Image 1 (tube, rainbow, N blue to C red):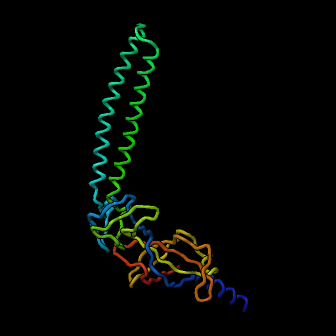
Image 2: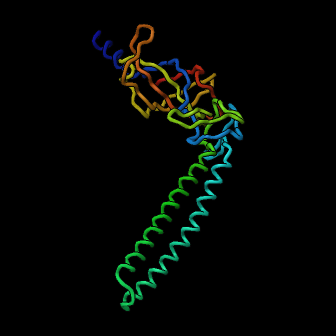
Image 3: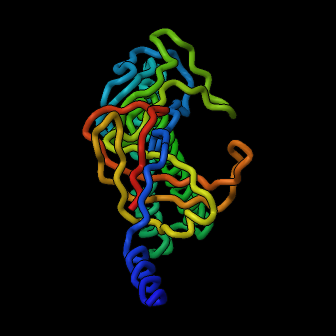
Length: 251
């Protein structure tokens, strides 16, 4: 009889799902520091902290006067070299016709061919330089890499930006519409979960449906206990702050 009772109780508790509320802290799902790869004076800053921006939106602009002048100069040089290359091609065709009629020598034909090769090479180099100058001009406008919220602004009109080995951070943005709730689990607990598993994240009493994105592989020590970081990704239509406390409701 006792064995039967023990068996019933064991079966009952085995069917009870293990559940717990874990304390967590909100983090940005993606945070990027933005800078320009070219030097210049900041002409305009179009955003401030807290602004939501769309992918490709111009956030900041440098004075582009010098860069526009380089592009214009490259285009003018291409026009000139293109005309020279066309003239050299016509000259080569004329010399080739005379050569076939044995009117001119081989050396004159070779010279005409060499002149055309040189002019075509110069034209190709000029076109490459135009692409380089156009890229530099485009880089004077700092654009949002994705739909984001501006979380830090370090630039103002008049700031002298010096591009070099260490980029000068001007703006910091974080992906909008999604956040990460970071919690910590001990080894026996973390083994019960897998990436992609749905969980609930509660922030200020509002529940959000999320899923486990990262299960930590290296332990960290918190209060003399070895635990693993677990990141839960969830979507939110409202703007939340990194560092805000949250609760992850585990199944």
